Image (cartoon, rainbow, N blue to C red; front, top):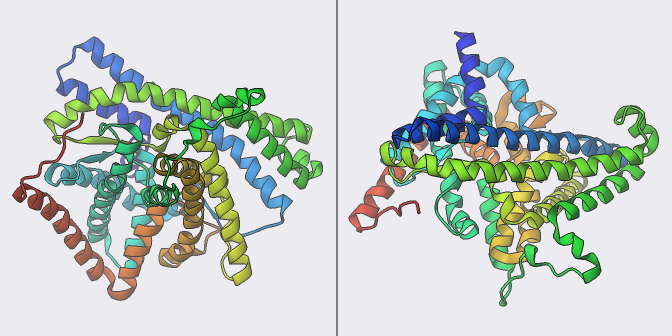
Length: 457
């Protein structure tokens, strides 16, 4: 049984396999010939592997940067990192996590089928992380095994549906169509960034990050790969100088000169972004047409909610600006926590890059350069302070040296954890029933008003 669950988790948590399976089902549903079906499925599979490879390159380059930063400025505290906290939690909650994940995905499909919220969440690893967090929270709340799995699965299905839904108005503005949604559990931060961008854009038409006017002598910076590489090399070298050659060469670079190591890591970061953008283009060219089969046969008008790198090509400059602004927000938050006492959340480089970059893209879409800077700065503050309030509802896991990082984890975890503190399983059960009722009722209300859910274009 445990081996079967382990295989199930391995399959469902791999976006490449999961999305390839969805593409295969969609193409078969459209009765495509064998050649087109194999081509579409394989290119979708390979495209997601390319994205994963790029993300791995990025994380490998960012890891030493985080270590150098902590050593250079002598800071210590809790580092939000989804992978680290889930790895610790799965040792105790592995079985319930796997079952919540499986039935939560079914719940997502059913909710999309029978409500107006037509979003199928396809980011497998984020689904695994949230299933794990819900398993912990439901256990701390006092649910026994079977009710825990039911409550966790329903909660997961609801969040998998609502997270893309709240962000879709901004996705339409960003992409210019309604074909695809964003499946990444930081939608609250991204939506807030877009709203902040809208608030700070000013009366004139905002200048996009992609329209930055460089002097003629700096025209080469218009190439996003060049600008990202040069900027990151400078940042790495500056932090390396503060950290010192002794530490870097003894602990991080395996004896390679600390400046050479820093230049290579900065260039590697840019290479990771380049690889991700290439993978995104490949996937979007295949998954959207393939998903029409799912939309037609299983869930009419359904939209695939895909991982966060799919939006990076829309504003590569905003990606870098968003990362830096979010990281600065994390540093400011860390300083406030140090001044006021209590838990200190260190700015995790990986979450600040992936969520800050996306926040920058959405902030830029609504407010140009100002929006990219301000929106992602707010995102940095949000992913710094939400973990402080999330940690107490995670039971013994809340005392670990890591915690969940993205905003939707914080918001949903605090919501269900607070309910549990007041009235235990009863409060959570009632809340799930009410939320499902509202989601179903929203669709019925639209039908009575004569409104129809817009079809994918």
